[in-house]
Image (cartoon, rainbow, N blue to C red; front, top):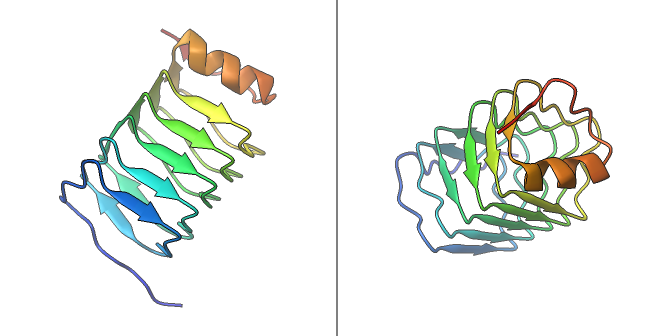
Length: 133
């Protein structure tokens, strides 16, 4: 399956993606402020250097996605699959994981605030290698 939409360096502020197939999509240095993703498939998508301010992911497939070293502020993941997703060395501020599947997600080296910590703790995520800020 070839999709590979390239959104690199785009400003997608306040956009909405609904029932979108974003397989292999490239999101490098994209402004995702206020973007709403609803029922989107991100299989093998690539994220790097994006702005996630008040970004909303609802019932999306983010399985195996790498968010290493990204910064999330006010982002909501609702009913989203984040199985085996990587948030290594990421910064998460006021991030909510509402009813999302976080099985085997990796938060090693992440910096998180207390709100985010509580969401992750309730999901039984290993938080032994995170820093609370």
